[in-house]
Image (cartoon, rainbow, N blue to C red; front, side, top):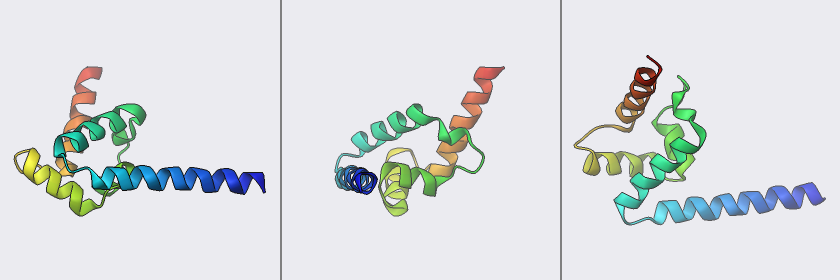
Length: 94
C-alpha cells in the first residue's frame, strides 16, 4: 500500500511539472529548460533519442516544441538541434 502511495505521489508531481512546462508562455524559459534537462541526463546522446522524446522529457506536446524551435532557432527543427548537440559532444571527444 505504501508503495502505491509513493508511485501516485510521483505521478502527481510529474503531472504538475508537465502542466507547468506546458503553460510556460515565455519561449526563452522553455529553451532554458531544454538546456537544463538535457544537461542533467544526457539522454540526447542515445541514437534513439528524438524530438518526441524531448517533448516528453519537457512535458510539452511535440507541436509546442516544433513551434518553439520554428520561432526561436531560425527554423531549425528539434531533431536538427539534437543532432547538433551530438556533433558537439563528438567534437569534444576528439
